[in-house]
Length: 503
Image 1 (cartoon, one colour):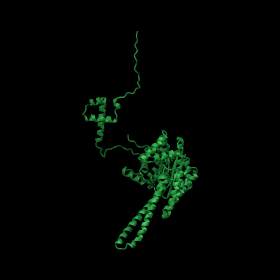
Image 2: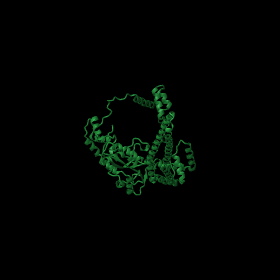
Image 3: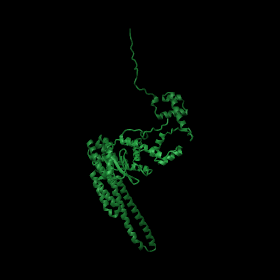
Image 4: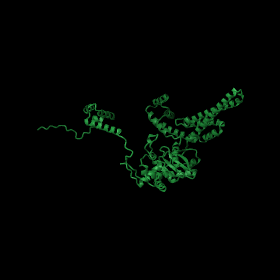
């Protein structure tokens, strides 16, 4: 007996099957649907040309027809009911919080809105109680937050009803870890608040602040080993105001000189030019001095802003020498405008080390990068300068090509490391100035603030997600999520409410 054995096909073939329909991209499917709607080519011919089934062609035609119907469908009538909203007491409470915190609505405005649009009477005391009922939960969540990821903090003071509010923010995530209404802003008050924050793990590598004496003295008491860098934002603001004042004064002298020139022309026609010549000569001399002073100060402050305070600049010792040179040149011109140049010179001289503290930290980080990639610090600094140059300039391409030739395969890794160091270099407390501008919108509605309201406000600002930002990585995330790198529920749900969702 002869038994023939045939190879059996595999029971479960794992080879993926690809069909022409799956290979068609969105553009080809759109063209196929348009041709099917036009009915210039039979469906069978379209299916044969694209090697798909007629059923697939009909499906694409239906999708396109549905899209056209939606596009040309008349808009619904204004009285059409879009959805129903179950208004409960819990919904009224969370909507009240949303009006106060998101809409910046005053308490009396909340009461009026419910009366006018919901036909519901809500007393002013009830609105006040709803807001303050969320404070306890907000305080618990504020106290639970781990502040150990904060590496650089920004500190400042804002005033409300002549009382100081101490503010502290993480520069990287914009997380507000301090918002406290106080009676004083002296060293003891700052020191106590900073020591309390240590219990939550706040031990930053450095802080940045303006020249506030109480602020700096309080940090020296609480964190004696934590450096407090100077804020170049306020320094550059004062310098810009000086340049603007000198420019306006120069323009004023030029205008006065032009007017005197016209008086001189009229006097000459009457053969009395000698009566105006002396004043015209004095104004011309004053005009030259005013223009020269304004130009000199503008150039000096431009060096300070664009070279000395820039991230891509020389090392710290060189910056210090250039800083001293600029201050000496400004001091040499102090006699021409002592009431405006004098205070600026004294402020710069006293705060040189604080304002250039970022440069010393930048040098340490660049040296660490140079050691890691086994290159000289000069090469790393040259790469930093190239990264800050204009990409449209041919000289930038040439410098970058030369560095790529010298570094070879290490170029890209070194470039990313330098870019990371540059992005992490903090020179100004702009983030806290931005927070202060947002706080003023709330303070304006609450002339008499309390610590409870500030605790609730701090919780809301930290857990409200950004709708837009210049930094794409921040969009759709809250400061708390950026700080802890972990997601959390909506801020209303964190307070114990359930958000309304349409079915």
